[in-house]
Length: 453
Image (cartoon, rainbow, N blue to C red; front, top):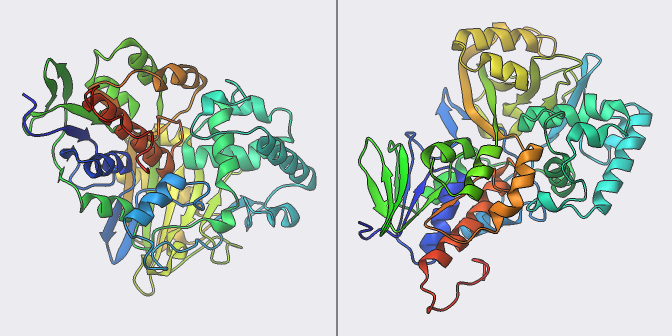
C-alpha cells in the first residue's frame, strides 16, 4: 500500500511547503497535495491589472522575532538580493479624529501619541514593561504566567484606550480576535517578540514569494483535494476525487477544523485539541484605483487601524501601493479594506458587489472619493481565516504537544496559536521531526533534536 512515497503532505501553504522541504532535505520522498489551483494558502498573490494583489497583509519582523522564517528565507536564497525583502515604511498607524496618527508600535509613538492620550501612553509603557519581564514564549503560550486569562481580562487594569484604540483593533484587524474570547498569552507573547514596527519588512515580489520558492523545489500537485485520511496497517491512505494517494505517513497542514473533518477517528488527545482550535473568518477587499490615494496624514504609510469606536465594520485600511513601489503599474493605486470580525462573519457569503459597496462606503471618511476611482475589485474570503486562540485551545495544547509520534501529524499556525508565517514555519520543523521519529526504526541512528543541526 505505501508504495514508494514516504510522506504525503496535505496543503501547500507555508506550513505544508516548509514541512515538505524539511522532510525532503532529510531524504524522504514527499508529495504535497493542494486543493486549490495555486500554492500559498492564505499567503497568495494575484497578478492582475498590472498589480501584485496580496490576499493578506504579511509583514516580517526581524530574525530575532521570526527565527524559523528568516532561516528558511536564507536557505532559499531569498535574501541574496538586498531589495527582495524591503522594509515597510510607516508600517502601522491608527485612525482617530478624522486623520491618521502614525508611529503605532514604535517607541516614537510614545512621544507623538500614535492616537493615544498621554495617560494611555504611560499605561502602554507599563504594559510593555510587564510583558517583557514575564518571559513569554510565543511557541509555548500554554506556559505563560498569564494562564488562561482573556485579552480583555489582561487589559482591564490598564487605561481603556489600550483596548479600544490600540490592542483591540490590532487583535481584531490582523488576527480576527475578539478580546473577550481570545486568550491573552498568545497575543501578548507575539506582541512582545515582534518588536518595533519600524523594522518590519515585506516581500517585494508578493507575499507568495516564500511559497513559490519552496514549491519550485518540491513535488507539488495542485487541484487535488483530500476528502479523508485513514491510517491502515501498512501506511496512510488519502482519499480524493482526483485519485487516492498512499504513503507511509502523512502531515495535515490545513486549519484545525479541516484536519478534524479529515480525521474524525483521531486519537482522543488529538481530537480534543483539534476541536478546541476554533477559527474565525477573514474578509479582505482589494481595490485597484486609477490613481494613488491614501488617508489624510498617512504620508506614505501602509496600514491604518480603524478602532470599532470609529467604525464597527471597517477594521484596517492598507495602502498597498505604499508597501513597495513595484506593487502597481505607473499612475495606479491599490488599497485593501479589511472587515471587522463581526462584519466578516456577516458578509462572508455576500455577493462581491455587496461587499464592495459596504466596505467602500465605510472607507470614504478615510479616502474621500474612493468609490469614483475604482477600476477593479477583488474579494478575498477565508471561512477558516485565522485560529481563534481561545482559552480552551490553550488548555489542550500541552497534552497535544507531548503525544508520541504517529503516522499522521499536523502543521499550521494553529499549532502554537500564532497566526503568522513564523507560527506556520516553526510548526513545520516540529512536524518534520515527529514524522522522522516515526519513520526511523528504533535500532537506527537517533533523529537529531533539530533539523537545523
